[in-house]
Amino acid sequence: MAEPTLRLVNVSKSFGEVKSIQNVNLEIYPGEVVGLLGDNGAGKSTLVKIITGYHDPDPGGEIYFHGKKVEHLTVPKARQLGVETVYQEKALADKQSVWRNIFMGREIANRAGFLDVGKMRRETQRLMTEHMGFTSKAVNPETSVRTMSGGERQGIAITRALFFEAELIILDEPTMALSLSETKKVLDFIASIPAANKSCIFIDHNIFHVYPVVDRIIVLDRGMVAGEFRKADVTLEGLIDRLYTVAKTGKMQQQG
Image 1 (cartoon, rainbow, N blue to C red):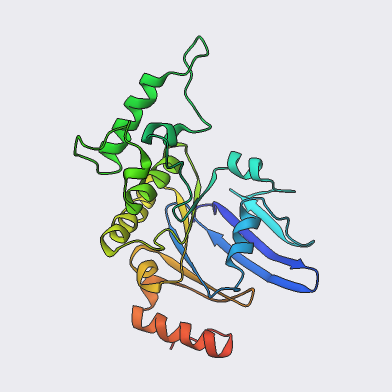
Image 2: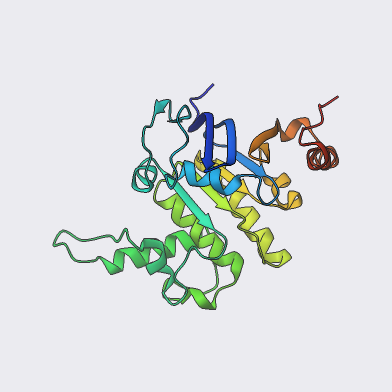
């Protein structure tokens, strides 16, 4: 079996007397999409902030990327390791063009040290055609992001992460407030991630969005992993039953 892209061992995080997450163990492998489910307060946000370097875990917790233990993970270090996060519709600069959003903070320069605007525009056009599915000439690299739909914006953010060789893409409720057609576009983008042999954590409250595109599902409840299983081993109806059991008891119903 391949080495996990990410492995957490006994990761906990406390804020004073409050234990946000407790003894979380999980592994994310290359080429898979893992759904992370849980109600508000389950610990999803805290877990993501630990993975992305915003928070240090409590003493005793361990973080591994590609089999190597990482001490004192920071946001820049997490990015160097290939961690990219897409937050709902806040991932882009609305007043800027598509090409500026794709290369923001990572602009391409020519040999003289000046921005190579032509190359960035051409590369954006290629990405729009080959990865984002834009075929109409009405939308081009100079199009302002604010004129685009929510699903198109999320597609740009996900494509940007893939272009810059992200190893682990974290999607934080990317379908929130989107229409049904726009949600389908985003789910199609998510389903394409394994083809690039990248890893993805898909965080959402809506099991009907998560289930079709993931390989595994991890359920958090009150800061602990309440259940983990492969989608191939449970139907959607069975998953709903198990989530109901978690909500009532805090424990995942055993699969029979």
